[in-house]
Amino acid sequence: MPSLFSPLQLGTLQLPNRIWMAPLTRCRAEEGHLPGPLMAQYYGQRAGAGLIVAEATMVLEGNSSFWHEPGIYNQAQIEGWRLTTEAVHRAGGHIVLQLWHGGRACHPLLNAGRQPVAPSPIAISGETLHTPEGKQAYVLPRELRDEELPAIVEGFRLAARAAMAAGFDGVEIHGANGYLLDAFLRDGSNRRSGPYGGPIEQRARLLLEVLEAVATETPLMGLRLSPLNGYNAMGDSDPIGLITWLAQRLNQLPVAYLHLMRGDFLGQQQGDVLSPVREHYKGVLVANMGYTAEEAAAAIASGAVDAVAFGSAFLANPDLPERFRRGAALNNPDPASFYGPGPVGYTDYPSLEPQP
Image 1 (cartoon, rainbow, N blue to C red):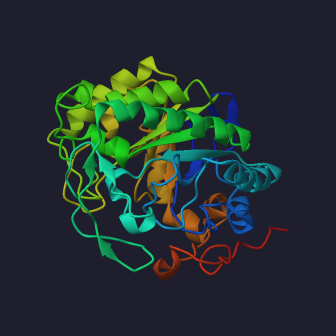
Image 2: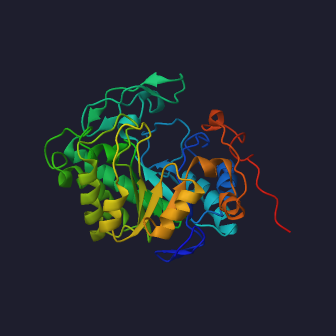
């Protein structure tokens, strides 16, 4: 039976273990959404992960929703990210870049006054976390026209090409948590008519077009989905039906892995989304959200999933796989330092002493 520490074949990569690092927005990019040396140090410290999925990264300029998140749409950002990929590869690790469009979660204060865009003109309730003027209410997004969508698909394709130029081992498409691609997928946020609205196969059209385009630029492509997650005021009338349809449809595309968030941050929407994916999807299945080492080991040993991605545990424990291997205590993450700036609560979490 496979274990947390069994190798895992992912495309042409042989991963040393099944303990993945989930994408974690940390807001440590430099001015101009530029990845810098501090980010390279952070990811290099965590190269013991079976696979690192680097944080959500802007594919197009002018679509910021976190103020200091990184981008991958210009040459300076490519060079900045190369510091990270080189640091991870020097340490023997593997890393993919999560490609992302913030959609209606973007804010005009972060984007030179530009109104955010979405499948339908429905605002997120509540406040955005970070702007130059502190927390602000989300604004009403503008409904994207059908003829605007090819440019977004092209932005993802070019971002994948840029990620390869920066030295990443592949990319993960962010189709989760209420950002643009997820907002098109779920009927709580997609109320449009026409070829990109209505039934599941039409709501999924933009995501599928992005996957087809990105696949031409990278040897390894994954996808993250969150059919139950209510974060960013999201919901769907039939999340099990949605994920079952997608699990079957994704087999027709070169999606090497599906990174599935199994629950709802807000605890409102319940259901088993892992079982239908395991039944229908033929690629590598990676689960995420609230796993302990023991639960992850049991899920992998049973064949329910192929790997588990850890978020806050990796944030506070750069040597998480070694701590799991030794049964060592974990550092507790400090929520006050989750979102930048600087090294405190970022690169200063201690690692275990080497064993003699």
